[in-house]
Image 1: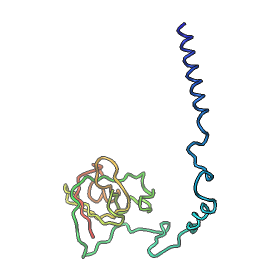
Image 2: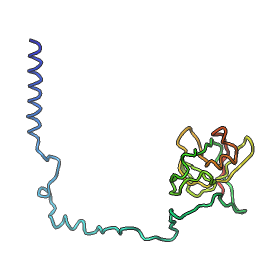
Image 3: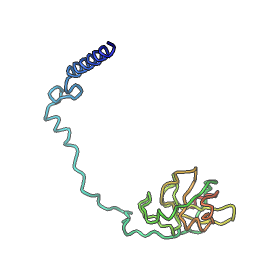
Length: 180
């Protein structure tokens, strides 16, 4: 009776597992206040140094109300601005479906503004993007993070991509310069 032996083995294993589980203490890893060296008064005093946080931080200098903030469509350049090359990379652009959605900086994406996404540059950084195939260039302001696909260096707004002639191809090699 091979079947009977198999049944007896499973029964024995199940019984052994139940006995071992019952033998474990219910709260073996949970320390008790009564087991420790700390008194209840000392325990309560350990929380005295923590104070409740205010309901909301008070606005300080330089605080921007994102509900009423209306960024300029084009970054402003000064004749004293300096340029630092970031090298060559691939640029793509945001599709229409992102229009109006919040960016990583908190402002709403505007496909008609001269803005862009970059993985590491600080928000507000002005970047000159040059299309070497046609020599056209545009200055954008970084207001989002990305791009996250295809080894691309920068994602442009639709308006910026139109300005340098990237719309038909969808992406292309560009030269990038930080303007400060």
